[in-house]
Image (tube, rainbow, N blue to C red; front, top):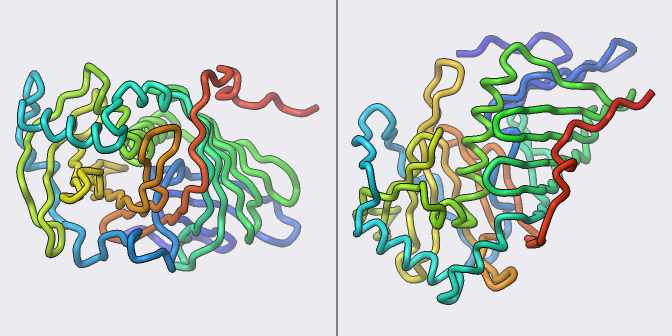
Length: 310
């Protein structure tokens, strides 16, 4: 069990943010997994947008017991992927090519270590497979905004406090970048289906399982450098409803779950607008996506650390 945070520290699950008040210097540190994207759903969504409840989400941890990844995709899993992609693109899988460069806007809530939910907004710019920039705006608290950039596993982060910007430093920055890169696959790219049409991806392990009281088609996804993801499809629509994966973080094993709902068309692709990101069964971030904008190109400099102001 983690030790309690020192005075003046507000700890998020997966991130420790030093936000001491008074005249002392304020400092933000501790990224960890889940800070970069974290997905969830806002309370009060319509019946058609309901996500699996805590009782419906499976709790097994596949990591230590997972079957070996095959050297090539299995036909049964490929058939499920084809059904899913057809449902999402109305039979035009080439539309997913445009999704490889996009901007996303969302609003929602953020769970801090004290277990309170705080309102927040998020904007993402991303280019498949390895560049992402995230801006998080917090409506309450000492940290007003966090800017995060990830190029492959190279990570930078800047926090805007009342006193100005504070650069993030860590002895574990490389490991944190690797964790963030995996979470981006699970929390951003797989809900968009982009890895499923990428040739190096291997899909396998197709079967039917129960998701609550409903039956779901399930398959597993192997992306290089990542743990195995498990994708649960909504049986009536064929669209992804849940993504789970077991991930090692700082000598701990975390079961991560991304629940999806409220699919709507964006540039000819049905994409989720209601998402929930949980760690070991506890929802930690909640977002309603208000826009997915596919773009022809995002300037590569977007993903660079901003120059220091003199």
